[in-house]
Length: 445
View 1 (cartoon, rainbow, N blue to C red):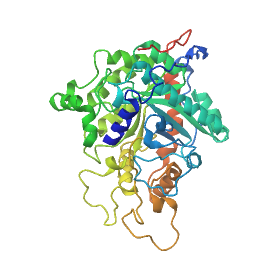
View 2: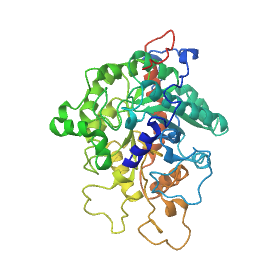
View 3: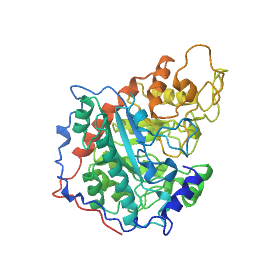
View 4: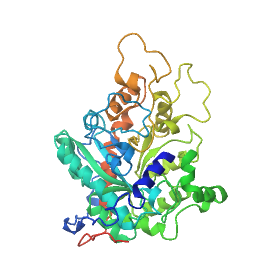
């Protein structure tokens, strides 16, 4: 996200900008049938027919409802010109999203941290509900290609039918998680993944201290990180809020957590015998950056049975420092840089599943092409595919990107194990949920 997105979000939530936001009533989750819980022993650790395919752990299908620069949504006409330098332009279109690629899409609704000082709890939750409802409707309108999965079993059935499974998630818990009732509400609403903290410290814990304009969104947190990083972890109530997510059967996403928050959440997950996801990561072994994942953190996630997704955010994939020995035709900000991150994670655990976290419509640019006007080299003679010319300009080019990587020698096996790993993590999360007799409505505020 950039400073311009901040201005867009503030404009959307300024007084008079959205006259219905603060008064919109929320859907009542009590109509949902409470899901049955199962003991961990009932969850198969080795399904008889594992899914072969991959998951995008981090995509924002309904981001246009939170950030106006993303236009009118996926059903809008595809523009004549598309580019991988598209942070502030629409990136997701139905026809392209339907092309071969991820079998499972974790669509994250956006609890906008830019507007938390200006927006009531009710308005913030209404924002989330609008996005969830939009994704439900989107899948229903395109039921020949997509379907909403509210359980791992439903996801398997959807995949067996030849369609893509969309799974609900929420990025950022500010003003939407004030207690166990709220956690149970989101679980009953079909939310499988929640990221407790996002771009700024909140009532749960410390967030990344990012560079550039994003620093301005978390100035207090960056000071805490600089002065006492070991104390930049969970708040007094943060551990309880994380526990409530776990006990509602929701997967915890560790992305955006400060290193101290990360370290303090892990024991909670271990005690409940559940596994986390990390929906968009870069390794510190490739880019020395405060937000990068350490080798130890990666192994700790794998020890819990968790799953990490590699991001291709262009501002994060350039190596730092630039390694010695790169080939002379290495193209910065392209697939060549992303490949360094992918190969590094695979080298740490070749047999582990490794997912993809696109962050489409998350305010980021994606890898540019190697060839052509936006690339490093002139177009070669002979045939070139769309990825060669456009880079990762839209979701329909994800599969060509991974196909090209595999042809160049990258290990694709971990990617195609990631859908199965995600479903097993989800099954464990649901098995750890406390039994409940009714799904409450979220608290207002």
